[in-house]
Length: 387
Image (cartoon, rainbow, N blue to C red):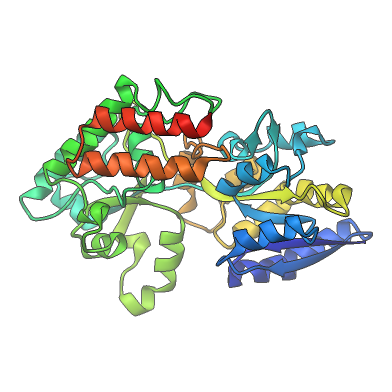
């Protein structure tokens, strides 16, 4: 019996999948053969849609977390929450990554790996701002940014006007996008706390404290952090894996020359945004039982720790804890931040919602509309889509 698994792992990750994960699984379940198919990310969504329509989808797939509710709404995915062993799996898994699979009362995937962003500071620039350790609060960060402004440097690291760039800041400042079960935007995205959060970002930008890259200026985020022109930004573990690999060529050692911390806390606490991939089983899978066997196994501690060797962060809590003692020196901060990170609204209409969110923020930040009016307008447009 063969089950097909579509994935988008990198070269290094695929090697581990093929050489370690596949043999280990097939040894544990000799009646199931795992067929691995690496898919190009470019145009992948269209291929999945075509595969589902033509009854040619694989049994399972490692899917970008923001796609899951959309495919679930089209009845393309199995609801895994009804299957044997789901509750136990859920109990062993980080809550926020699991939430990205939620749709209409069920869970249409399980988080096979997760990530989030943490605050990464240039150590020398931090010292220039008069600090020996990263700011714990937004107020401390703003004070550091004010100090650096006189030196022609920028302190507040918002990397772009999109949900991935803005959400950690907006949430940490007390803003919210929807209610807890992702059904209401009115009174949340335009609440007093949300308006205040956006006003704060607008004010920072008007005072010249935010990286120019937020509005498409130069230098780019990483270039600015490396040169010390930018005090900090928030980024994923790939910042470290990429920069460690380039260390010889660039002469920049990220482990020596940067320092990381959870996001500085504002009225909303220290918040970041969840990224990662979910393992989904297609509704027309020919072997749903065997596919579920693999999905459950893949979320246990051992396979999760094996994939973690590549720098992927486990969604299994025990494996993530174990990672902090594995020789992957930058992971501990990410595991800590995951405890308070949030998913981008897991609803089928997220793509449309995000476009409206982005535009509202851009108008306010560029001074084309007052923050309250921009958010009220956004709410009206989003409500029309949700209804």
